[in-house]
Length: 182
Picture 1 (cartoon, rainbow, N blue to C red):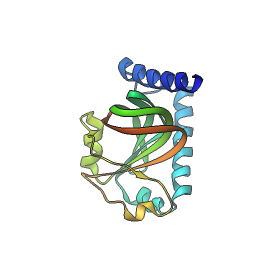
Picture 2 (cartoon, rainbow, N blue to C red):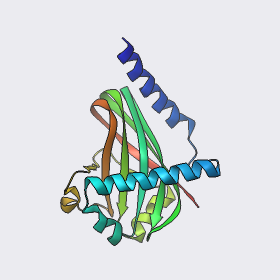
Picture 3 (cartoon, helix red, strand yellow):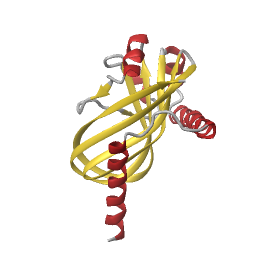
């Protein structure tokens, strides 16, 4: 019974976060420093999992890194995470990820998400807030050598790295992003 309550709590928390319109930029300098440190650590985790990602970091126009995305569902689900956007190696602002799903889903998990932008057009689209992933979009699980087979689709490549939790899911949904310049 307590496991069910935990899953329910995670799902309700994610849904409330989506509904409340979480702020994109961290509120204080300490929160910004904390997010930045988490972003750098997440990048290192991705590189440790797949060392060939270094070539993407060096050869892409930019990337968004979400160090921790929390996801939960009981039928209807949601996810939320804060991150940083980099262009040509420089941090240019903060971004957040919101996700909604519906279908057969139960559980809670956390993961890191990394989105590479092939060119300025893809990065600029992301910054407008008009950028979203539809239900058919998929991410590549970051594992050794995964980046070797990854191709840009509509100017982006998405990688995820599991952090913890357990999620059973056969659902549809999409991710929406917002951006605030530095």
